[in-house]
Length: 301
Ligand SMILES: NC(=O)c1ccc[n+]([C@@H]2O[C@H](COP(=O)([O-])OP(=O)(O)OC[C@H]3O[C@@H](n4cnc5c(N)ncnc54)[C@H](OP(=O)(O)O)[C@@H]3O)[C@@H](O)[C@H]2O)c1
Image (cartoon, rainbow, N blue to C red; front, side, top):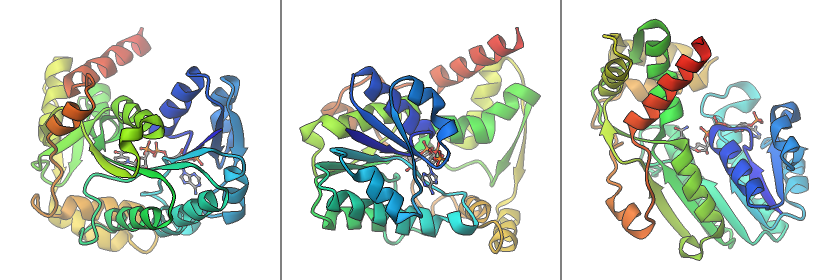
């Protein structure tokens, strides 16, 4: 039995579906079981649980052989603020897995997780990595770069396809790596079953680096339009981050990230070493955007 925490998410859903397609027994954890109705239909055991409820984590880990943690709450607030879910909640999950005798734990961290990161979320990911390493559990830590689904599409290109314009936080000039969730899921599957990844941390990224401005331009070029690209200046993003912090700590965090100078922390990635060891065909941003455009055309028909 494999426990997928975050089974309704962009990555978790892909992993759950692939595991089920392989004939694995899967327990899909979610706070809202109706969000996992499709997974239940495919044969998953859907279990209600919450990372801020340690008892539910103990129930979820009971009888699980492997666990993959693909949840996060970077935008969370109130009882679901990131500190509660991403820090305390994930440490409780690791403790529950250890107590239940789980044989392997896969943790989705983030590219750039480090103790001296300017952004708290990346420091928390590093802290949880350390907790996992110290737990005595067999583990694999994956550190993916920005998912194309959220960072290229949701926060940027989607508005270009729908309205011909996009509004970017910050100058949009920082080079970043984007990876398709499909490719991150491929490495998550390897992390669950490939012995070469036992007790290792692996950085996972896509084939190219782009700035947010270049992403917007590529959407425009492939859709055959000239998008209107506007920017919230870093100084305004910084002010918004301060104003929003007390009641919207997650949105405040995103504002803060986009207020930082381009060299505050690195987001570029070179896939050469990863591909040398684990060859696979990575999706390019152009292929990803063409898929989104084709989807849009289907919806409009
Ligand atoms: N997105 C990226 O660009 C990116 C980049 C690098 C690393 N990562 C990491 O990759 C992993 C997957 O990211 P994603 O973008 O696929 O996530 P996502 O689509 O935003 O989904 C988040 C998931 O977390 C679950 N979740 C949130 N709070 C929870 C709680 N209190 N208890 C239990 N589950 C909770 C949600 O489940 P329910 O709402 O159903 O409970 C949902 O399934 C995360 O660890 C993330 O930090 C993501």
